[in-house]
Image (cartoon, rainbow, N blue to C red; front, side):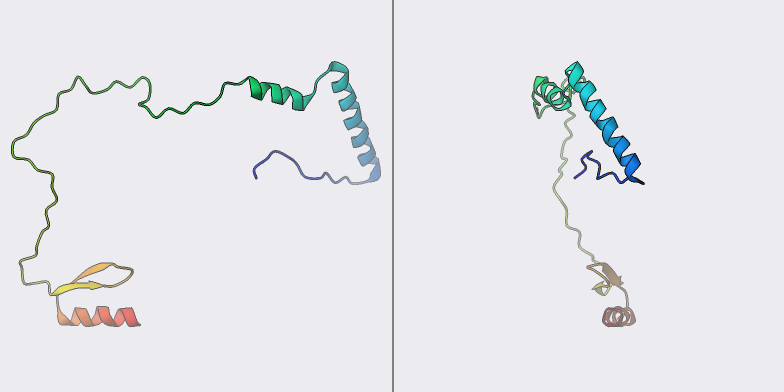
Length: 119
């Protein structure tokens, strides 16, 4: 709805409204005299433009990296590794607010987190 149309113009008095109407009429007469039709001109301009074409390809001007060879490393793997906690300081993981995981180190801390969630 971001068009360029303006709303209705309000004038201070009838004299200003009459002058504005006369100016508008004289402007339209001048346009008709010179053969200018704004809407027709816009339509012709829009129709003469080439149609838009969308291409999903690499941007022009950027060189590809085909000339750079890939490095091969022996024994490397990119698979994800799940780590397991083997210590004895953390008792567990609590949820404080909106799935916020918090480590629990003592029984008192567990009670505090539990009461914070219930108010």
